Image (cartoon, rainbow, N blue to C red; front, side, top):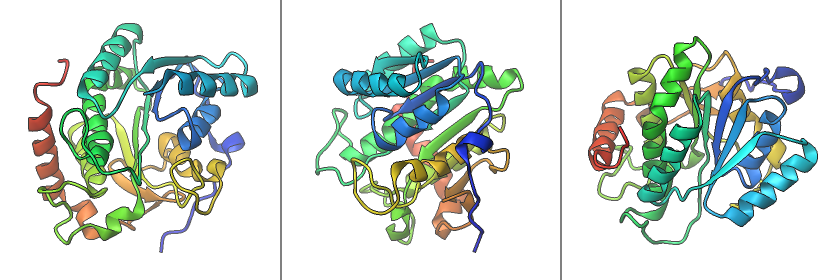
Length: 272
């Protein structure tokens, strides 16, 4: 079994000077802790969440710990394609680059559908992040043109272990294997970006109360967002352990099928 890596944020996280960082779900738990770790010296940190009041509370708390952290908030509901388009328009107008895109996740949500008719977890976690990432690709690729290290990181979970044998049931589309497939295809199609999907471990968050604390649970996504040891397109378990996903997580044909299906669904939604 791959050995867990040791990560000390104070010593191992590189400088973010001049970088532009975007965190979804950054108003609480893992996303908020990541912003705290990022906050010392970047050019900008963008926070995209649904609730303005939750965003303000998070920004005030972060600024109390890191005064003058350069955080910018734009309201965004990842379960609504229109909201994602509006967020992306503002970001594309106001920021000249994007160096790190950190996409958080949701779990244990009530049954239902998004405004666009998708099952709520799939619509938010896969379709929402797919549309956001695709919409922001111009800024990611522009940053990569300068030779800098550009990252796209997506939180997944160990729930992919319970996926059907085929990996993704396209009739229901309710498995975390989708995140891994998207990241694999993103790495294949855009080799100038470094991409990774990961699970943070069992963490005490606002989504579920289980085992490790939030700062510890954040370490894997910090590693995936910064370490030079990340192999693009891989799935990582804490901390920095690869090769532990089920076989369908490395199924390139399945990943392409998901990518093509998603592209068709979103072809009228993307801004460019």
